[in-house]
Amino acid sequence: MMQETNDLHLEEGTEPLVSGGPGRRPFVLKIAAGVLAVGAVIALVVIALNASGKSELSVQSEGQSSKTHSVRDAGSAAGKAVGAGSGSMPAVARPPVLPGREKRQGLANIEVANGVKKDGCYIVKLRRGAGRHAADLLEQGAGGHSKKMFRHVFDGFAKCGISAAALENLRSNPVVAYVQEDAEIRLNAATWGIDRLDQINLPLSGTYNTGSNTGSGVDAYVIDTGIRSTHTEFGGRVQAGVTTVGGTTDDCHGHGTHVAGTVGGNTYGVARGVFLFPVRVLDCSGSGSDSSVIAGIDWVTQRIRSNPSRLAVINLSLGGGASAALDEALRTAIAAGGVAAVAAGN
Image (cartoon, rainbow, N blue to C red; front, side, top):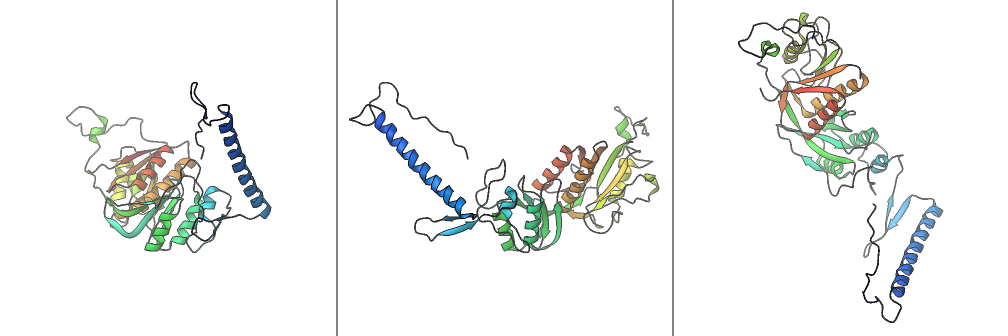
């Protein structure tokens, strides 16, 4: 770390620092001798390390036995931080500082779920620059089950069944930014129609006229319970999507199809020419988790980046407690070019 240096100097009119000599000279000579001595020690250490050809540094403090720390080279700062191997939590001997970040002191925070917590389930968010390889190694060593990997909104993963010991290992790893308790996400039922959208003044006309603004050329990502793609209201505009809760993207609940109908149905849709993408993050009972929604947003973000010429709208008609990881994922999707509409508690 670069530190500011202060020039040593005497102000005019001050007394000599050392008596019996010509003002500054004895003091300056002492400083020069000290600098030369320190430089010589550093040079000897560097020569010794280079001559040995080893990546080990012996550190001994007063009253303690000598400890040797092995520094692994995985080709990047993140690689050095997590080490190598699989099946157990990667050991970290001398953690480096990732680019642009100061080293974290102590354990990573556990962000408490604001909603209904999913016991034993956690979202692990790595620090910027850690990389996918670091996330893979940490996920493998964490144990547990029901994993979800996050690749595009941030580097990290979610898992259930993580033991207390594995959780502490994750928190102590320098590439982990924070660990967040996973929480349940539930539906918010919609109650508004579309009649008011095309007019300013009351009374309502009972009609909806969009003119040529049909939403053609726009991709609408419905993050919900899936979409019934065979429904006649969609006219074949439902595209291949993704599910993060198992099964298929077909809607076994009904809410996602209802939302998709409001977004782009032929009769009651706001934009009747959009392509509809089912992003199924809630199960047949209408329940999911922060991690299942983040995984859905992760997929959406990757697709937006892969199709920069297409306009993208992201709809989340669902709700839950505050989530730093979910907020960050959605901010990343927006930065990639998506326009997000999130239920505000209707």
